[in-house]
Each structure stands twice: as C-alpha cells, then as structure tokens.
Length: 476
Image 1 (cartoon, rainbow, N blue to C red):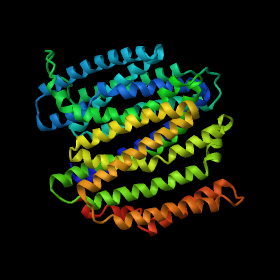
Image 2 (image 1 turned 90 degrees about the horizontal axis):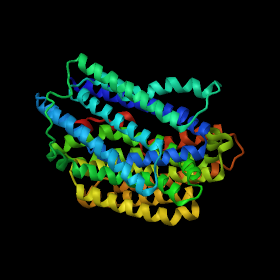
Image 3 (image 1 turned 30 degrees about the horizontal axis):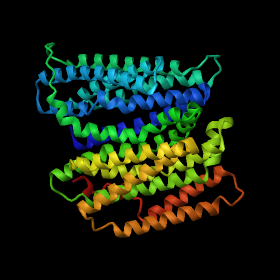
C-alpha cells in the first residue's frame, strides 16, 4: 500500500472516530445521565473507572505485539499462543477485579456487566489487530466505530422522542454489551471470509515469556489510568453523597474527555513518525516543537473559552441540573487539557526512545500525589476537590516530562516559542476578561473570542497551519 493511501486511511480513521465520539459523548452519554439521574450515573461511572484501571490485566499491550508478530511471520502458530494467552488474561482480569472489588466494597450486577463489556471490547480490539496486520484498513476503520454507531442509531430516537421508556444504567450497559457482541460477530465473519483464522492449533501451551516483554508498557499504562481514573472511585468511597458527586464529576469530565480526543488522535500519527525518525537517526526537535506548541495553542484556547463561558455552556448542556459547583468544576478541569497535551507529546517521545524508567517513575509519582490530594481535598471540597487533585497531578506530570525532555534532548529552538506562548496565555486571560464584561449574547461572544484568539495564535506562529505543519521535514 502506498504511503499516500495509508495516510488517507489514517485520516479517515481519525475523522470517523472523532465524529462518532463527539456524537456519543454529547448526544447519547450526556442524555443518558440526565435520564437516569446524576447519583445513579455517578455509581456507574465509578465502577466503570474501576474496571478500566484494572483492564490493563486484560490487555497489557498484547494487541500491538500481535500485529508485529503477524507482520514478521506468516505462521499462525504464534497467533494461537496469543489467543490462549488472551483467554487466560481475561480470566485473571475477572478474578482479580472481583477480589479487589470485594475488598473495597464494590459489587452487584453492574460490576459483572461492566467486566463482561470490558472483556468483549478487548476481544474486539484483538480481532481488529488481525485486520491491521493484514492491512485491511477499510474494514478496520469501519469496525473501530461500528459498536458505538449501532448504539447511536438505536439510542438517539429513544432518548429524544417520548416513548415512555424507563432508563437505567443496567439497560445502558446491556445495550453496550449487545452492540460489542454484534461487532465481534461481524468482525469474526469478515475475517473468516478473508480466510484469516485467529488460531491454528487447539493445543494449549501458554507462553508467559511474552508477558515479560510487555511488563514495562503495561506498568506505564496502569499508572497513567490509575492517576486519571481513581477520582470517581474515591468520591463514592469518601463521601456520604458519593454517587451524586461522582455524577457531577462525570458531567464535567465528559468535556475534558471529548477535547482530549485532539491529542489522543494526533498521537496516533505523531508516535509512528517519531519512531521512524529515531530509527533513521534523524532529529526530532522540529517535529516535537511544532507538535507541542500547535496543540498547546489550540488547547489553551479551548481551556479559556471553557472558563469564561462555563455558566452558559453548562446551562445549555445540563439545563436544570446545572449548579455553580458543576460550572466551577468544568472550568477547572478544562485547564488540564494543555497539561494532557504535554503528557501525550512527551510520553510519545520517551516511549519511542523506550525510556520506561522516566515514564514509570513520573507516572508513579503522579499517582501517589493524586491519591494524597484526593484524600485531602475530596472530604472538604467534594467533586471540586477531585478536580483540583487531577489538575495538580496533571501539572506535576507535565512539568516533570518537560524537564526530562530538556535534560535528555537539549532542544535549541524552543526558547522564543515559550516566550510567545506565555504572552499568548496572558492575552487569552485579559481578552477574556474584557469581552465578557460587555452585555452581549454569549453565542456571539464565544465564537468571536475563539476566532480572534486563533487568529493571533496563527499570526504569532504558535499554531501552525496544516500546510506549515506537514512540511517535508516532518514526514521524511
């Protein structure tokens, strides 16, 4: 496959995922929360985060390793070992999750439903690894969003037209399980039509040596998930109204999740390009600089827009469920976006260099600080305290990555860029104070603020245009 064709497929994957993700978050997930109530949704959100954190047991990077194995060998013997190991890890994941849940007081049908969903979804990703390895990118793009697209088609009429249905989080999770099961069946059927089998032999021989190679990646992924996802769990455990506060946290965090798609999807292109440059022993400084400051410029605009227009935005999305607490939490959490950008850029650099001592050390410290801050701040400030703890831990991780990057790579071309970024941040703050002082409709002020801010970012060359960014030197 030509590089141009491959690039077009990757761009299609990003665009389709972004579209489906946005529709899912804002038109389905948000509406379900309003239907079932903040307290019920908060309980679901807490257990969901618990299953996500331990999900690294179910998938410690096995899928990516499978792709490399299939690409380097035409034999299916290895894939048989992978599948057996996959089933073994799924069983361990369920047992360990159940045991820990029992200890910390999480239980009930909802836990088992979410565990089933995580196992099924992970198996779908496992199947999609075969599509990637055999370069069946059209099918891969389609199946990457198929389960969510099914739910969107099914849920939108039910949520927005009065059919008199009684919504519950169990119904919501069951529907997700059914949609993933359908996606797994469709993917399996497609693989069989292409005469691609998931295994060759039924002889059981677990190859645990594979896990040793995956431990550094798995530990890093676990620590990152731990300091990003423990907040909702602790809210439920530390507060008498924990379900409601977790629901408030979920409502605000939803927007950070959505905006984080920008650096996440960018990293899917950034990381392989980095690896290619490093393999060919070429400089990565210009690519890192342009990627970092372009994403920082855009994320700062999003963060300041969210802060200055937090009240009308929360009123628009949550109507009578909106509260001053939700507005403040939303505004605070969105300032984590630039820090998340720094995390994705610098962690991609260190992962490409296999600097796992830095990655795991920083992530472990971030997790420890996050836990400490949550125990201190949640009892006093509730959901806002969890948001403050997240912001502090994100800031610590981003700062340490920045320091280690400059210590290890000693970039020479970023001093002026940091100065311009500081001036741009000051402008965003002052301009926001000025524009919100006028008694104008916020639907006029918000786009005006965003457009003028983006224009200044382009003039200062903090944010690169697509033509400027994708220069030949980035892709050579």
